Image (cartoon, rainbow, N blue to C red):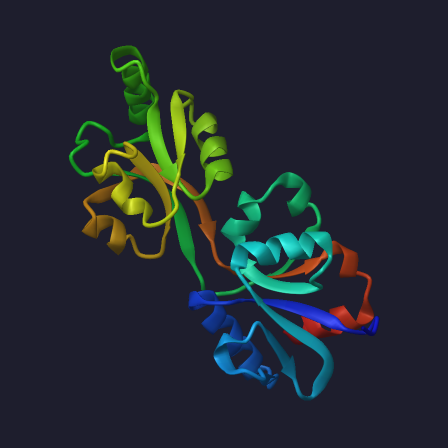
Length: 227
């Protein structure tokens, strides 16, 4: 493979994928695939040195860090959830106006006495003292959740790894509360959950990123400037 080849990672599905494809279309960079929309690879006819890789948005962060991608599109939340040594190897070049979402702490509606993080801290200690157990938090964001909880004085908790729809965990006996990413809050509300008044962990959006290993490449920088 030529040293001039540029590898770009695009999310393989969801709103991030559709938003990124619109950027390429707007910049008159038409992406083509030999096997249609389910193809894992793509190319740009006018830019034969560019290879498109369709990957999970989380994997794009990892591949940027190890240098197997030069440029990638992913969510800011996923970058911040990654390990520090990964973050240090990735540069955010631009933040877009799509893919906006917020990582929040959400609790069941019937927890009427819990409105803020200090209230949650009290509940966590009650769980430990009365139930001899720790407050369980279901999440797909263990790193960000742990950092936020500790920063707000909540230390008596246990994380439960979410493998699907996190919203249902408190109602299946799998956790007491959750942290989850939300765009409008409608899904949380529909599942009888509400966001704590001071429970915003992180605001996220779609980002254009590059690998630090590629930052000195003029060819990569030319593509970054075009995007």
